[in-house]
Length: 581
Image 1 (cartoon, rainbow, N blue to C red):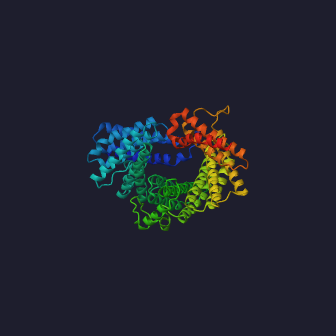
Image 2 (image 1 turned 60 degrees about the vertical axis):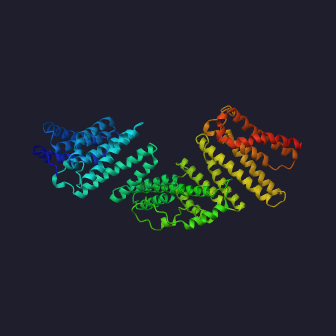
Image 3 (image 1 turned 180 degrees about the vertical axis):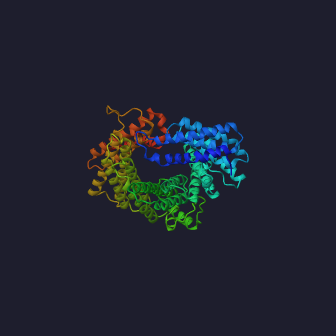
């Protein structure tokens, strides 16, 4: 055990230890009750006492700079002063004290004194890394500092089996010193804290793979040590699942989400505010589950697409055979916990059949419904709308696996009712971008229903009856209505369509006009003249697209297929009209 010089040990016994106890009480307890108009009152009092002890130690160290105990004690006090200044929103002073702490002790890391200094240096560097991470363009410097913490941890573990001294151990009486097990736990906690912020910094720098690795290591270490906030752990585990989803690693994503479910259920909900906090975390986790199932359905569709983005039955059969032969996926990212049957009963393999898709649909819908209980329209408008869009996407994915066209139409109708209900509740003045998304989606939904109804009518090998004609025309007009509403939002204050559109709406605007051209040609009119009128309007939309792309050639790559079809139609459609005159 590192010892202090006799004269300083006498001071600590008579005053220092008691002052430090008072400091901890001021900072840990009294500060919670400080008034709003004086929020740092207790912290300022604690700072004065810290400074008194620090001044005394500094004088002693000036007289005996070679004494390890004096350097370690002053380094500990500088670290705590740094935290105090940061807490009081005086970051420059806080950074200065943290850096002083590192400077005092960095040479001791390379000597036999590392067990006395390593915890303080790692803790101070972690706080410096956090400071830099919060600054504009400070992520690179934060990464450099936090990697030093990681290096110090591994270097100490490689060289020593001793439990290192804790940050403030020399500020406590000898009879209150910690056991080796307690010291090791605190040392591991410092490294875990650093790992957590390393994950954040890597994420901010776009190093997603490294961010996920550090996040997963942090979560595993927290489980092993047992000292963690269950609500935050569960949300972070669910967040990690979203990384695995982007890599199509669905077994790993599922495992993270199942772990999140288990841990969030362990949270106590005795107070009403705690119940609300846990409810929100559960709703957040439910949304991550929704994204998981949607991504699994999308991934499964991509594996079964044919050349026209429809279900390929041959690929479906081959996928079923391959799935039956697949060995159990081994997951190197597993957390050290028992999950029971939930993980076993949750699908992560690609979906092949409609029944499999239906089971995933029903499971996902339960999470949407749960999330909507918290993210209500009154207070969580954006979240509520996104959940409605997720539910629409869920129906869209399910109908890909459906064969019966009439049932597909019913699913589209549910999507339309869902989106229409949301669109009617929001104000386009405040949610213009969202309104555009919903209007465009409704236009697509009704257009898809038109195509399905036309296919159903053609299967009879007879002209469409009055009821079918009326239904097809009604759907055409609904689709036209929403695409027009979408395009109207792009007009300038004078009600004119701009000659050049912004990049983020350029392709949607061209595609909307392309839909309108097709829809006008699908309307079934009873009189020939009316039919010709609809086709002339169709030609106008095709011509608009050709003119726009020729006027704005930079947009050609993003609308190449539509542009080529339009070029053909502006040549063929006039000839067709001439023949019908």
